Picture (cartoon, rainbow, N blue to C red):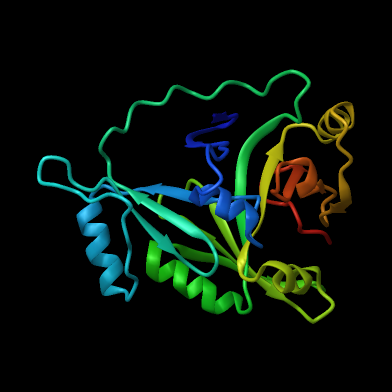
Length: 249
């Protein structure tokens, strides 16, 4: 599926076709249902495999690979989540994504994925080593400590987070699921329209919050529960000016 506002990121929805499938195993595990994997493209798969091995990360493949048909994709299991690294073969031109559909929440972009872990600095170091991500911010709230990273292509941000204390919602998440993807965040064009669309579709946002910067610019955010999204905790936000979300006062 195409994501409004994000032409080079695709969204896949999948379901198992047999009870013994790997996907069914994921759904039945403490990690599922939810985000199953992230696929990344690289200019050269063989070079990427060499770099991963040099970093102490051993990828595996579901394909046997031959001289006539070499391996096209390798898998990495990193801290409770699966990543798929794919070479450039078969990459087709993607048309510009459609505008947000009328009556939808009005997504303008995917902002970030958040990965919960016992030590966000350790996890961030792994992302830097495995994928060449760069850290762009680090901050602490009453609930969690977080390192914000960006992919080399600048398409998407990653957040490595750990609980600030044992009472944190991140601590409860880790107790239930272990290290895993915690949520995905989308930016929306209009806050009121997004909330109205949720309600119209029988979805009730929760943990809604708002903030105002020193110069009066506003932002708002909220969440949609995994039980209403097929297992993925969704965060959505609106900001009056780019780059102010989550920064009040």
